[in-house]
Image (cartoon, rainbow, N blue to C red; front, side):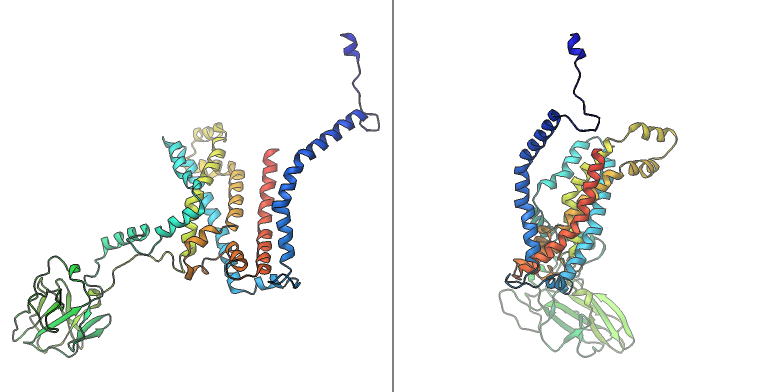
Length: 449
């Protein structure tokens, strides 16, 4: 025992040089580390390093790859309107999507701490992460469909609109081509002024008989009167054929609840609506005047918002992206929130701080590192967005929704067949991503220390 205790441990000489045994162990450890890392490094070089170097080299050649053009492809990036629009849209994505996702994720993470079924709620919000971008794009292409019978958003928009505004009763109706009515400001008016005692027969077509209101009765002209202008508005069409155009047949129905106006040079002097049999009457029509069926009778029905149009296509796709990635932001921020020192929050409450003050002055500052990681990760991700834009945006407006990743594919393989320019766009996209990646790596190193 005493000999073991008195045995001296080899120490480094005064000059600082390690003993040979220590140096051998150190070299052996380095060789072992390199041997274990070599397969991963080789795979990383084959899948990442080589494609990057090849793309840089390919970007210096023309479309065929035979002629060296130097930086001409990079100059073309900033001269091509389509690529400049893709750069602008990518900038919109980078500014809007990560900020919205981080904010929404923070709010949901804080709120889920206060609900009873927090785990189930988090699972529900996180579930879209399990859906592929292809499936999500197809889903939202239907959600944003212009037809309210298919698009969920437009179905809701039409329902809300029609709750506050009456839809026109006879969209698409028009005169049969007789000499009684002519077009006027979206509606129709009589070709010549009507005189007191006259009874007008105003036949319209362009309406399926099945679309008429259930209150529609057989058309019947109003009785003529010496001091009144009367008439009938009816569907001048007999199902199955027959009947005489311009005349009221027994099988034809009147168009009820249609607005009719009496117009004189000074403007509209009287307004009425047709009865269930399509008849109308202006009782005080001294001097006569034009009879007009205003445009509100024939306005096309409200069909909702053009979500997939040139104006809203980028916000619509960003909305789909938010649906997918909100769960990611919420879970990461929630993990950071659960590690906050509870005694700090309780001390603030005991000092009289309100929940909003605690959130703004304590929770958010303490979560700043986590929020930064989430934000930078999302910035890197949105720079590479491709699937949603390609699937959701219809062909005619795809250029309005274009982003750099999609432009790179379109130029290289989607019809442009210019892999030199496509490689240049890929290199530019890599250069834009590198600062965000470096910032994220720096944050990870700080957190590990």
